[in-house]
Image (cartoon, rainbow, N blue to C red; front, side, top):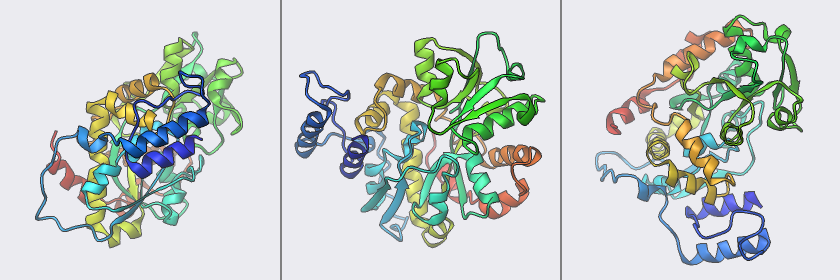
Length: 367
């Protein structure tokens, strides 16, 4: 049912403030009945979406129309990547008429695979996952940084830093996933040997958050909306927060990448789609309440309170300020030192990045 709701939202580019979001509505109707009510509402009352919440940019007469009017984007379960999921109206304003959202969820161990195959044209994802894919030979072009501060490390009350996890059991959603990779890098940064000093539990069928709450693991790396939920419920202790704790807080965590063939063949379309995504990123930072409502009413997450807190916690305000190339260099260097990749940072930057669109949009979309 959530997938059907997302499909309707992405197809119509609208959202419904009145429809019930829980399993039973106020009248006790089932989720299916509430969905039918929602569909009838969407058929008669389309409310303003993301485009109506941002300043009008005016006509760009000197800029040619996109070479293609079709663009394909993913639906990602990680709600921190929402700028790529609430932009239908922004894309329409850029000249796209065939906007497709791929329902297939990204692989937890290789989310960039959809991009490399050409199933999607652009994707917001974790920087280190893109780098791992590049090291495997996958075709990806890194285009921009989007935000920082996704991940928060939770642990027991008696642990006050990452080094205190030595000998502890940590949970991850699976081996080879982004959280396992990042936690390994964080441990290595403070002198731990991730393979010897940490005891890992990685079962895709069991959520690390649930294992942590049940006391079956000592720590886990949470991503939105998990940190917001645990903080609200006063469960566990925050050991490390990538939004505020150095050095990780000084770099992007999620970045925008494109399929190289799409970028090469459609430079104007690439820039226009990027502009829509970065404007949506601005919305997340400047009006988290409205952006969270879009997220919840689109069926991407059930809790408005956790969604709006996510948008306040994650650093959507840094895409102009932080250096995307520095972020790639930072991650790639540590990943190579830890043995995760063989490519050098220099080779990745030289052959798999294209910052020309970002540079132009930074000048155009001034704060």
